[in-house]
Image: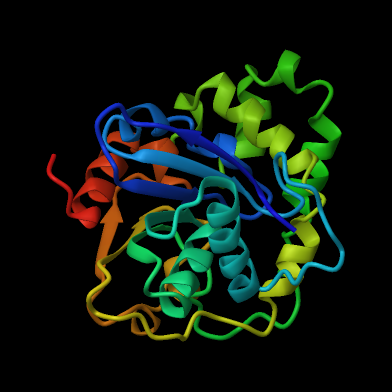
Length: 266
C-alpha cells in the first residue's frame, strides 16, 4: 500500500522534512508547527495506515520497522524524494528512529518528540488504559464541536496528554478527537508494538535529538524513557511543563530544536 501524504513547499529551500504522527493521531497534529517549518523546509506530512486519510489494509504489517519502510517508500512513490529529515511524535518517533537505522542513505536527521519504544521492557499486552482514549473519542465524535469548549470535557480528553490542556486551541482538540475516533489502524498499530522496543543502531553521522516533556503521562520517565536505548550520540532534552505532544505545548521551542538538529542555517 501507499500512504496518504501532503506537502507544504518552501519558496526557497530544497531541504525536505517529513513529519510522522503518533498512535491514534493524524497529520493534522502538526498544524501548530507546519507554517513556520515550511518557511525553512519542504514539509511532507504522512498519515499512517488506518489513520487520517490513509486506508487500512489488514495485510499490511504494522510493526514499527515495517511502517518505517512504508513511510520511506510512500515518500518516494508520491514525491520522488530519496533523502529527508525526519520528525516523529510517539509511535512516529519510534518509526523515525527505525528508519534511520534501516535506511541511513535516506535519512539526514531525526528529531523524536516523546518517541515510543524506549521502554525498559517490551509490553506483552496493551496497557490497561490503551482503549480509554479511543472509546472516549468515538463517544464524543458527533458532539465534540459543541462541547469541546467546556473545561470538564477538555480536562477528561486532554489533561493526561498536556499539562497545558486549558491553553490548547479548539482546532487542536477537535482534530485530535476526530483522528482518534476514526483510526481503524489504532489497535493493529498497538499490537505491532507488542514484544518490541527500539534497540537498533543508528550511524553517528545522522544527527538525533530526543525530546520528552517533564509531565509526560503517556510515556513516563520511570519506565518509558530509557536513555541507554537511544543512540549514544543523541541529544536528550527535557521540556518543562510539557506533556506527550511537545509540538502542542511548546511549538516554538520544537521548531528551534528541529532546525538545530537538521543543521540548516537559521
